Each structure stands twice: as structure tokens, then as C-alpha cells.
Image 1 (cartoon, each protein chain N blue to C red):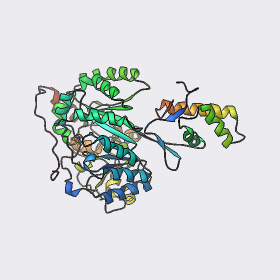
Image 2 (cartoon, each protein chain N blue to C red):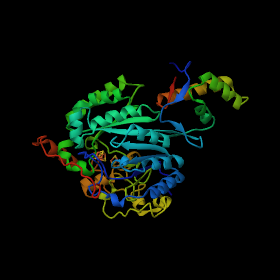
Image 3 (cartoon, rainbow over the protein chains, first blue to last red):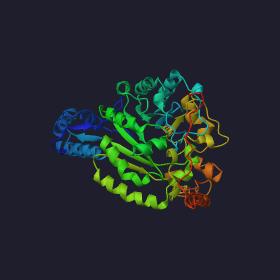
Image 4 (cartoon, chains in turn purple, blue):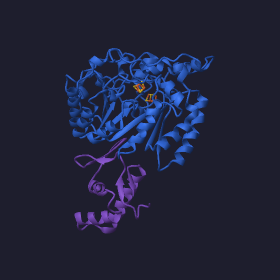
Length: 88
Length: 364
Ligand code: SF4
Ligand code: SF4
């Protein structure tokens, strides 16, 4: 499954903190800034990356579509490389 | 002022059904009658959340020997903490695991003594291996993180590949292979446990090849025995810098073997507020920062990476807790470690008596 067609979901044992600003993982915690926690929230295995980008654009009207789409994809890839996220 | 600790390590009991020959628990263990109550632990866990901790590691001994472990998991989750259980798997049933997961367990670390049943049971001093295999199956029925821990030493490091295959078969997300570190009971068995330099050297390409083969599937961490290292490990991420450990009786310590350092008084977390213990107590201040450092650490550029190494090791080997960790190649006392290695490997056979870790008094 490639990132392009897959639906990202957090791996078992990875979750957002109650306040939503920290991604808790077995080895530690990643502080999320700006739209990052919105992106992670949307990774529930039901949405494609494209759909997540569309939701973001609605939440941040006026944002540059190409930029949002590129940055979201690279953020999700980084999380997947760290073993925090998978595409189903 | 010090930044908040990242994790609370709750050693909820020293009781354990296993008797591992390399157990790092202190030789003088807390008896069952000294263990904190559920309320005390819950209060400490709540304060850890308020203090800014992210993780709660429930460990021991065998934490499952406490009947209230589910309540402690729930207390952790309710305090906003990420809850990890470090266990031998003994005392777990499928139903009990389900309840723990429902209470908010995020991650389970299951220890293995070997890939082969007979050897595993010998190192543990008890029949435990088969139960662990069952536990691994139950774990995979849930969406929690699963780490397999394998402890290696002279007697089993030549079977690394088999150990890795076992963890892979069991479906672990991650395998942590740790060489024995010499504290507590492990020191008593050092002569039978310390691998040779050749064994260590041979282990590296195995790890590398298996890592490549399993990339994207199972991660492998490999911890070397620091006696063979050039520089020491950043023990506990630095004294009083990121980890806070509470022993079964409530004593707050910067690391699990800090009890070997004379003159330190450990405040009790059941009686004193956790924040004051962390920020102000003399025990946590003692080796915090760099003020206490002597040469060669004081003027070394690695002091922000390894914090001068392990204070307990400096105490145990060099007899001075404020000395540079003697495993460091820059330490004037490195020869003590070299002598130890040589003493172990010259003219000594493998056929020596194990000293098994005993259970604290009043356990049964
Ligand atoms: S005896 Fe073994 S299982 Fe029990 S605490 Fe020690 S190392 Fe862990
Ligand atoms: S001299 Fe001290 S700070 Fe430098 S590498 Fe050795 S232990 Fe670390």
C-alpha cells in the first residue's frame, strides 16, 4: 500500500494526548505544532491523504493548496518512517 | 530549577516468580509488607501527570503480582500518562490482559530469557517460557504496542538470530535486545555472563543483517554491554534529568541502583510531594548538571551527551560515585574494567554455579 492511495492510521500503541498537542508513542512523545495535531487527529484509517488535505483546507481557508498538500504528505511520510503511522 | 521528568518508573513490587541470574534489582529488596498501598501509588501517579511526565512504566519485580495493577493502569491513564507494563508474563491470563487494555494500557514489554525453552527456563530459574509464548498471542488480539525484550550474555549471545526469529514469529512491533548490565544480582554472576570481545564482534553483523531483513516490519534495538564501550552510556538520560523512579516502599530515586551510593537519602513519595522531591531534594540535586564533575569529564565535550556516565558504576567499580564512569576510555581508572574483563575470561570455565535472584522476605 503506498502513501498515495492508502489511508493513514496511527500504529497500535501510538495516540494523541488528551489535550491533543502531544503524540504519545512507546519510546517517548512528539510535540505537535500548528496544524500537525489536526492532521494526526484525521489519521483514523478512514480517510485518504487527499481527503485529509481537503479537510485542512476547509479549516484553514486561504491556505496555499499545493503547499498544504506537499507538507501534509511529507509530514505523514516522516511519521511512517518513524514507525508511528501506517497506511491501510 | 529543573525541567519536568519525562517518565515515572514505578517499581510497584520487588516480588517476582522468576529468579533471573542477571536481575538488576538491588540485592536488598523491599519486603511485601513495605509496599505502598493502591491509594499511595494512585496519588503519586496523579502527581506525576501534574508534574508533566508523559510516560508511566509499571515494573518490578513482577508488577502483575499486585492485584491492583489494573487500578494503577487506570490511574495512569486518567492522569494523562502513557501506560507501559514491563512484565515476565507470569500471572497474566487472557481475561486479565483484556481488563488491563480496557483500563488504558498502551504498551506491553514482555521479557524473554532465550529462544530455546530449556535454556530460557534455566536462566529464569523457573518454568516460564511456554507461558510467555501464550501471552504473546493474547497481546496480538489488542491494538496496543508490543515490545519483546531479550536479555543476552555469554551463554546465549551466539543464538541471537534465533532470538530475533522468535520475536518476529510472535509478531512483536519491536525487539529490544539488551546485553546484561552489571548491577544488582548480575554482578554476582558476572563471571558467567560477561561475553567475550569476539562474541560481541560476531553479534554486530547478525544484528545488521536482521535489521535490514525486517525493515518496516519489526524494529530492533541493540544495547551493548558498556564494559566494552569506548564511552559510557548516558545513564538514565542524566541524573535527575528525565527519569524519576519510585521503589516498592515509595523511596524516590534517580535510578534503580542509586541505593549503592553511600550518603544519599531518598525522600519517600508517599509522604512528600513529588514536585518538591524532583526539584529540591538533595538526592536528585547531588549529580544534577555539571557542578559535581571532576576531570576528565569537567572539560570534556561529551559531557552533554553522556553526562559523565553512570554514577552507580563509578561507585561499584572505582569506589567513588563522583568519578568519571570507569568504562570511559578517558577515565584514569579504565584499567579496572579491563582487569575485570580479563579476570573473567582468563582461566575460568563456564561451568560455574549460578546465583539465582531470591524473592524478598515475606513474599509468600
Ligand atoms: S527476576 Fe527476572 S523477571 Fe523478575 S524482576 Fe528480575 S529480571 Fe525481571
Ligand atoms: S570523560 Fe566524562 S564526559 Fe568525557 S566521554 Fe568520558 S565519561 Fe563522558
